[in-house]
Image (tube, rainbow, N blue to C red; front, side):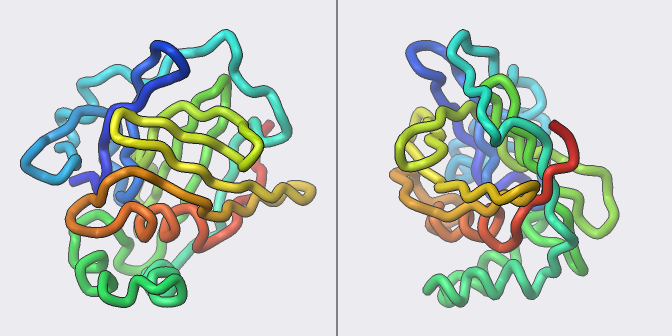
Length: 195
């Protein structure tokens, strides 16, 4: 089960997908209306991924970034410190959203494509979030059919930290999208592993 799978638009024409909240990452596009936007892995893998754009970003963010191992407790602590204490139990109870022990997140940014992978408890990486992005004044702008999200990057040497700025996207599994985005993008920093 993936947490947030929604279709996204590239500037003027491209569809993309967001599976933004599943650390067990079952990946891809395809929306199942009965799950609050979440899709089954079968529906997710059946849809095409992002396509390339003529105006794809080529800045210092381009490359592959990986977090150090992050524990289940660290992910849940992110909810608590950001005011989402009421969602800790719910978030922790959804199969595939958090590791039992620890997980590693990988973020690949290339040709305007934004791919977040999660490897939980030593399993193979799975797609958590797939969409396109643009670099705007506020940071990275991720656009889907249901709203926009902005994450502010801080790149120091080979380290990338992301800060949640805003999102107009709806909740998934009755959890605010801000909570989901903070868990997967702000719990740990990312270290560049490839350019």
